[in-house]
Length: 124
Image 1 (cartoon, rainbow, N blue to C red):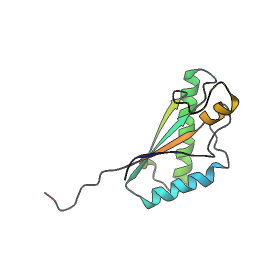
Image 2: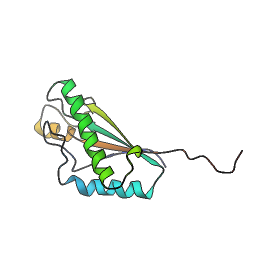
Image 3: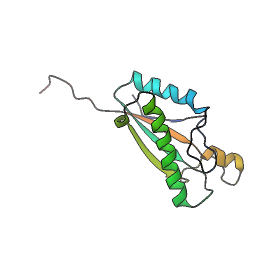
Image 4: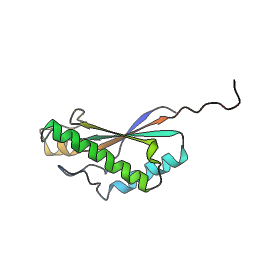
């Protein structure tokens, strides 16, 4: 299985907020299903922000956003040790931070999946 980055549409956040919007559940429920179907997959959750505010504030906020997604996934049955969170701050914009629309696009979470190595049994 190849590592793939998924931008979770519907998980964009309000400015300065780390609470998931209600619209996020549909997308995140799909991530839960994926995690249940592939038990050897580790999920890497990356929080992002727009460039509004200081970088220190944005880095902290991006960590909180990633953690809010992790909390949702754990609440819905994904083992916490399968989820790694990281805050990116405003370092990787996908939208123009000079516009409100671009800023909204940048307030997001991305999830990458990686396969955990499983040792073959019975081989010396």
